[in-house]
Image 1 (tube, rainbow, N blue to C red):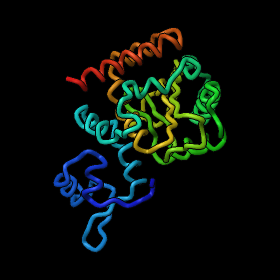
Image 2 (image 1 turned 90 degrees about the horizontal axis):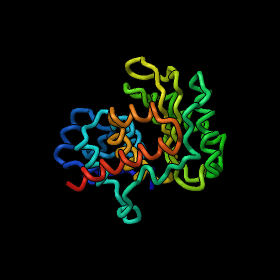
Image 3 (image 1 turned 60 degrees about the vertical axis):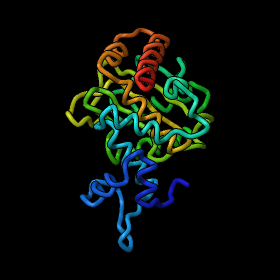
Image 4 (image 1 turned 90 degrees about the vertical axis):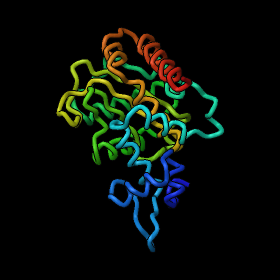
Length: 238
């Protein structure tokens, strides 16, 4: 249930943290919880939002913990959880956009090219609302637009699209730099969304980003990302 409340112990299990560490962070006001009758309670939807915002700043070790914590029986055996959701039809290396609004509109159209889009206007509104709350742009020139909450009725299957805007646009990056690489995520479950997001953060190192900025075809971009994901999976197994 996406809006259920969790106890401190349930929250710790959900995010892959030690309960004692969770209590310390909650007592210091660093976690999205409320005390009710002396006990901490965490709303699952707010926890999902919090983790989405925190992930770009987390260490690889912490991202790995989140990946493990978010696994379910259905996807535990899947290896390439990011690039399995991508295809060449959902990659555009010359996206025509000059503003945030036009960028989001073109990204939704890109989802439409995959044949998986069910609710174009709904997805556009949801992604725009999420960006208006807090930009998903990172200091490395990457942004990861996504709905605030999973949208199982917006697409036929979970999907990730990649767009490159060669000249870059202002997208609210913390360092006020331009953003030129955009990954749009639309998943159907909050746990899977967080697992995919944690994996993607681990994949986007400097070498991979340089390669994505120089590749000439969607197929080459996808091959670059597949190799990056294989590399992080190999590190997981060590």
